[in-house]
Length: 123
Image (cartoon, rainbow, N blue to C red; front, side, top):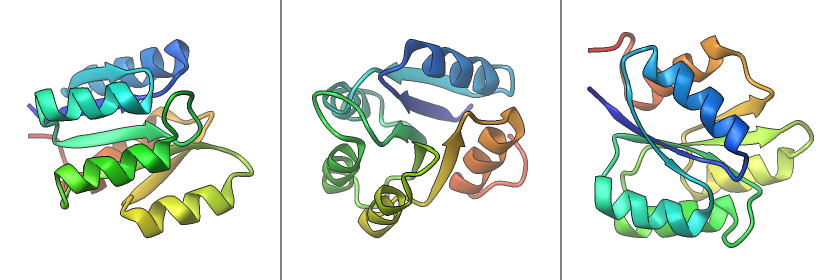
């Protein structure tokens, strides 16, 4: 079972993502900011990360940069609100592999995670 780290300062977004991923066979770890994401990444070594861009304490792009220092091949997709094109571009340049626009559709989250993990279906 693949482990996915969900990072978002919104408990509601984390809950929705967690429900979608859990119901599709993924193990889920949650973090509410970039600092916590780094700790959880080191501790759990997830197979993939779905991370918000705008968060308190540590911005998502900064957290992405720090995670990629720990693991240069980390598989990270960003969660973003509409109108954050410049931030998405920065995240992609920093090594994010994909992004999901909020509010998201369940299918888009699953498709993104499957692409992130290089799979067309769940194990």
